[in-house]
Length: 405
Ligand code: 7TS
Image 1 (cartoon, rainbow, N blue to C red):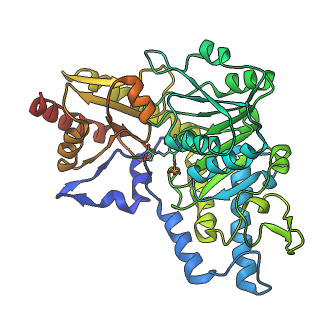
Image 2: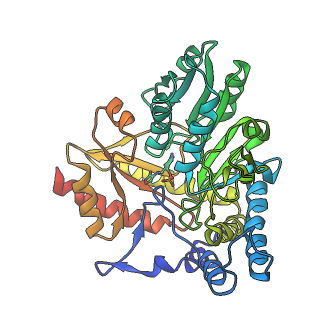
């Protein structure tokens, strides 16, 4: 069966709209991807038919809403091949998932313990660990990158000591696109007695993820970057670790029994889900997974790779364009600058031509500093983008490059 981009595009209503009278070319998918009708319909169905608080009511609507939410948990479990639904925790996004790990697993660390991160991390995999440093005297060590934007694995191995407790790195960089060798890195961390946490925000939307095969002890991601609703994220955690960890937040539903003489916690995964969850959007997330699987993650990955290779080749031919991140294994995004032009100016001009890209530091300021720049322009692709759109982008970029140089 051919990869039918036109049929896919018909499922995404927003792709029909125009900006400044021009057809929208949406190349900001690494920030958030668009949502198919099937997901939007499910959100609508939940609001019109099934809105009732979950895990609370004896009444029919509450039971239906609970079943809808819990069906997503099972769907996510299968999607990432977790061993059980107890290991799938719903959060508000990758950011909250990573804060949960740093805060709660962080409670188990002792003064003098060490954490390994990488220079290419998003702020959401840096700042939560720094917040932990205000409570514990833990040390943060940073894996550097080479000229192509790959993690320096010799340096990585060299950072370990007998105090290394946890490594937390991104599956793929949101700036460089580099896909990190998670399996190999996790194996080494385990051989040194450390736990391995993966920021999968840019991993899950682009390739099949098997948390057990990867050897991830934690895996964090956001629904809105994988064609799902906003406001929902997932934290996968290995049961044995989750059981040892204290709760992240206190409130309704995360308790066993509350008393002023002492409170007990609910079983997994509810111990980590305080308060009313975003059950409407959680329920609709399973429709995004259905959608991805109806097309096939391998086919999506191959299509995105074609776009990446085609766009990279064409961009390299435009005078003045410099691409940041040239690792052989990249997810479908390209960061670049034109000569000395400011990234913002390039972004504004492209926007006026109907092309949505992101500009700035992409919440990765330590990486920018190490590259000696303030920011980049970033084009990022998704399953519905086309070679024709890349051609439009290249034509626009050629004009912008001529204007700015
Ligand atoms: N980790 C990575 C690697 C990311 O790219 C992002 C968001 C996050 C974590 C945080 O995800 P959130 O859904 O909780 O916000 N990255 C971007 C980006 O590149 N442009 O906008 C958001």
